[in-house]
Every structure is written in structure tokens, then in C-alpha cells.
Length: 454
Image (cartoon, rainbow, N blue to C red):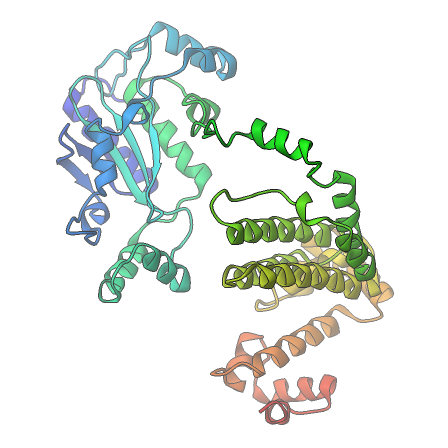
């Protein structure tokens, strides 16, 4: 920290430090949420929503103190006593002089950084300054890119007119991408620079207590629902029955899965929505598919295949409009997982071979030299090559070629992708080499294969 800097200069210096460290917009705003300093223009260039641009209204309300206790949370001393280190505890209890701001940090309860995410997925850090000095607002930033279909769906959810979507896409494209963990660290750094006190991630996340109060109306509480179910013997299914069903997926046994699923009584399923039976069924299907995904991975299915199947089936179910269709789609999804596991279990290999095959599957669109696979497997290239050939009967280079041909077969059936584009994307040296390898494994040239599927 730098000594001898006045209060306003010190706050400005802190804003610059945070901006330089994370390259995310930093604003110093007064009590009315009017900017006094803006580093990085993204926040102020936000497209308008209902006639307002710049900072989101909800962020401005939090700065003005209209956001309730969340905006000006105080450090919970019991949490500090439980989770902080001795040095951090000493700083909080005794108060310290911040050499940058020239302020003495209040020993009792300094305001904590408030982490806020808008409905548009923008992340902000709001730190109220002592007295009437306003706040430092850091953001917006994203935890992951918002592009393509995801952006279109998000904007549609917020009723953004098609004519305004281009400006939102440009806005999202200019936002910095910062992982959740690094974002937490930015909040901790900002807090320490302003107050001179240490704060842990645990304290940051737990000091506020519950995220929301549970809503249990008197006429619809869990206790009342439990009593009603017990009175009418409409009990939830036995957990062992559920475990048995998903064990069949792990074993790739579709017949056993179907037998167990047929034994579930309709009234044994939970009520997962109070207002919509269709929504309840969809929620049940999503939770079942989530469990099936884990069971399939445990059964040896490549995790990328399992997660992709999960996404596909959940997206399909979300589009359905009646309960019988959801029931059929959920059972079809569970059977699909069992079939996929059964297919993958037909050739069981050692954990090393399975890891390499999974790595090849996930990185098929990249260069895959033997040395890279050996480093991933944690063994020498020669030993990995011998082990893989012994267990699969195929050299690693040949296996990679086979998988690229299989991927090429899928791509050829899609519209709008040329054969030369496929060859380039799958790292074949040139079109003639692609044709030679493709014909070796399929008996057809890529062009003949494409004609066959027209």
C-alpha cells in the first residue's frame, strides 16, 4: 500500500488497481449512483431496457440503499470467529489504518462487498464506502460467454425486440469473462484495499446467512403435505428402489431398468411444482435424467457423451406440452442411457486405455500426437502405445483415424458443411488423404457416402 494519499485520491488509486488487475469496468459512484469515476466504458454503454441505459436499475437501487440489507451487509462477527484466521480476526476486532485511503477501518462491522447478478447474467461487485461517500461498483463481467443461441434465448426471455438484439450481442461480446473463483477474489481484494482488513471467501459467502427465506404457507407446508401422504399411504418411493433402477443403467441392463420402472406407483413421485402438474413432471424428468447421467458415467460411458445426451433429452422434454409425452420421453431417455452404457461395455479396457479413448473423443478436433496422450496418461509414449495396442487390438494412430472417420460420417450428413471443410476441421492433411483414409474404413469415398444419404 502507498502511504500519504488523501481519501479521494486513495479511492481513485484503488479503482485503478482493481481495473488493472482484472480488466473489468470499475466505477466510483456517489449516493445517487451518479458516476464520479469510470474506468472501462462497458457498464455505461449497456443497451437500454425499457428506456434506460447505463448501469442496470437494480444496481443503482442497491447503491442508493434501496436494495434492503443485502446492499449494506455487515460483517457477521460470529462467522468471522468461526472461519477466519487469527490474523484476519485480529484485524477485524482491533481496527486497522488503511494507508491508501487514510481511513481507520471500523472494528465493529464494515460493510461487505455485495455480489449481484442481473437477469441478463451480468455480474457486479458493490462495495459501499464508509459515511456518505457512495460506492465502488465493479462490473459488469460474465462467468461464461453469452453468444449464439444462448444469447438469443436469453434476450427472448426478457422480451428484447429483434431490432435491439444486435446491440446486445455486441455488448456481451465486449464484456470480460472472469471465472467465479477469480470474481470472488476480486471482491476480496477490493475489500482489503478499502478497509485494510482480511476477508476469506467463506466469510464473504456465509456472512449474509440464508440466500432466501423458505416459503411455506400455512395451508401448504411440508408438514401438512407429509401428514396427508401418510394418512392416505401415498408415500414416496423407497430409496432402495430408486437405487436399483439406476444401477441397471450403470450395468447397461435396459430390461432390468424397464422392470423396475414399471413397479413405481404414480403417487410415489414427488410434487415438484405447486402450480403446474406439467411443470412438476418436467422437473421430475430433469432430475431423473441428471441421476441417469451420473449412473451412465459410473458405468463407463464417456462423460462428454453422457452430458451431451443429458442436454439433448432435457431440451427435448422442455419443448413438450402434455404430461403423457413427458412420461414417454423420460422413459426413453433412461433407456437411451442404458443402451449407450451397454454399447460402451462391450469392449472393456483398463482405466488408462479408457481415459485415453475418452480424451481422444473430447479432443478429436485438435492435433493428437502420441506424446500429448502419454503426458495425459502419465507414462512413456512407448509403454502407452504397447498397452493400448494390447488391450484394443488397434494402434493409437489407427484408433484416432477411425474416430475421425466416424465423426466425418456424422458431419457429412449435416447440411451446409463441405467435404473440404470436414477434412480441415478433422486434421487430415489434404482432400486426397481424407478420401483415402475414409475409403479404408468405410469402403466408400466421402462423396459416395454423401450421395448415399441424400
